[in-house]
Image 1: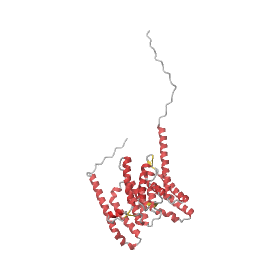
Image 2: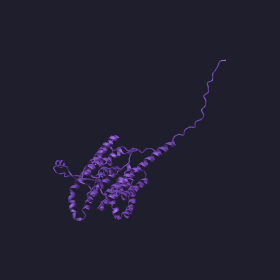
Image 3: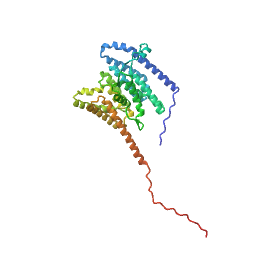
Length: 378
């Protein structure tokens, strides 16, 4: 018997108007908080200049700003898990930049300097990359699926590309972001894209244009508070999304492999473990290997793939002296695991289809047709 449906509560009056008014005040509060922060930031840093490490002061100020913004938007973001990953990558961007200046700044072109009357002398390619990925996602999503897509993935890919790409030119940042987004719509098997978008974009750029592109290194983060905050926030969000076991499995495999590399290469074990604290590593374990669209299903297979990625990373680093072993390990193992799952699903469906198909009836010997009786009149 089908259980009765729960009663539908009536919609509160003026719901849309309340939604728009709530959005308006939150946007206004956000602008005010960010404006006050940037106006008071200089005086704050100068006031605490002699209190200790300036990076710690910047991290504390950014952390307070992020907490205030989260409080403003809590009723919105707490209801929709799609906001959680963008919040995490925003925290990684802000705290890592506060810790050791993660964002690159390029000299502004002469026309921009002239147009702004000298107020804008530099720009960050990260934010232009974010704009490019969001625009690309909007166009391709509308063209391919006939509807406006959710932009969380484009936002994450834009920030990731903007952080990971290192170049004195603008086009490598933008091209990496565009390759990342386009790959989701082009490189598909059974309606699934195989590669993590940013991992593919970075791998392609490092292969095609190594003379113009470098990658954010795996240098250790040099501020413990920033690293701790990112790890706590990342762990909480991954746990709530039900994917914490993936980065945990990768780290559990990475640590003993680091000691193995230390024994083989003679490097200090601290140097082999140091990448764990780097922003690149954090992006890698919280976004690339946990991407819901490009990971296999099931906790056991996901843990196995994470361990295989860690093993492949060590293999590439030891055998080929590969400085981009993190990218290449996921580039090889991730799609291979997805293909295995896709073809296993196809085989399972074929077996199930054959199992439910009706068995063919036994064919008996043909019975000769009887000639119709001829009635004669006697």
